[in-house]
Structure formats: structure tokens, C-alpha cells
Amino acid sequence: MISMPISIEGAREHNLKSVDLEIGDGITVVTGVSGSGKSSLVFDTLYHESRRRYLEAFGRPSATGSLVPAAVDRIMGLGPAVLVGQNVLNRNPNSTVAS
Image (tube, rainbow, N blue to C red):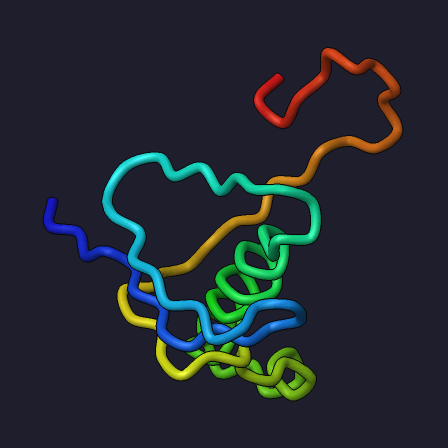
């Protein structure tokens, strides 16, 4: 299987200030201090743009009409994505997305 790294240039969502990065093959973990832009990068840039492109590919104008492109200069190598959220109703501190 040939895979292409995800390349992001000029990400400017929320508190991101023209961030450039490349994400290679395998599992990637995004870490940083509070307010550093982790959620802006993963959810508001990568996932949002992936979802928009996926819906656009299937010609769903009603679904994509409200989805504006992410605030980036360029994203390459991005495929469809699935968002997995944590159950906020479970108050167990040992519960993670993986469990």
C-alpha cells in the first residue's frame, strides 16, 4: 500500500498562526500545553477539511453548503476521516477513547 504524508501549509484556524507541518505514516499524537492549538489543528483544520472534501465528492450540496474550506494555504494527502469522540456521560477518570 502506498501512502502519502499529510502536508499542511499556512494553517490559520483560531489561534494557529500560519502553521506548516507534515504528518507521516503511522499513528500520530498531537501534544502541547493548553491553548497551543491542538484542537484547532486536529478538529477545526484536518477533520473539518477532510469531512468537507468527503461530502463534496458525493455531491451533497445541502451538506457542504455550510462547510467553508479550512483556513489554510494548502493541504495535501488528506483522505476521508472518522471522528471518534470521548463519552462525556461517563465520569470514570480511567475511561479513555481507546476503552
